[in-house]
Length: 363
Image (cartoon, rainbow, N blue to C red):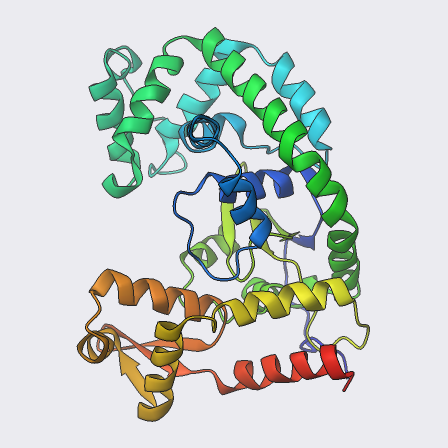
């Protein structure tokens, strides 16, 4: 029996593939490194260890580059190596690099067929105006005023902006990611190869997304974009663990997921097995998360408010724990009267135990 659903009537689908995409893959890991106070279980320890070894100035520069200039740096051109991407970045005209980023900002949250009318002279007249504009495109909590003030100083000086980005991206590649990519690339190629045997075009896009990521995706907002793009590319990553990072740009949805093998495959790839087990067990290595799982198991289903009352935790804290447990698949979500209700995913727990058994005892 194949390890994927059999569809007798093949639906009309557009391109859906699993690909290594080295530059996009490395960029996704760089973005993980840029996140402050990362406490998400399952994120690979290399990210935590590398971040701990960087100076405050190095971290600040990395956060500024990856967060403040995400749309200037995001690699959206095909299957190229990271050194080729760096050469391409260095050859890009400074004003063009800046203006392409501003063009992306202009279109965020706007109708696809519209031509946003932005008064850039006014937006770039001051740091305050620039931050005010960004808050019309992103949720206020996602706009770091201090960081974007630093970014503004470079946005208004394109040659300085380009020099900073080229210098930093070359440094972070040579200092940290070059050796790490050499280490993880063979494992990631194995993940891509393992998925090549499955005909993703024989599935609906949401079924293909569930099959590749190994997650239910019942409440994943990025899934709403699956049928709106021409192409969906799934990219196995060595560091993201049970989490997913999706970016839609130029008609392609790039979905970065934790490197794994298709469920039901008979071939065993120890490096991938180990990575997936670590990601799953990391979610259990915390007393509060185990307590929440225990509460759900005892009650059958539970709401956020119920957990808050029992644990005396704040709503943001409980939501963070539930997001972590849902990402690793131990909890499933459903909506009841507009509120989220969580139930235990017994199948995921049993499969985790079986995976450990097979990995350590060979059965």
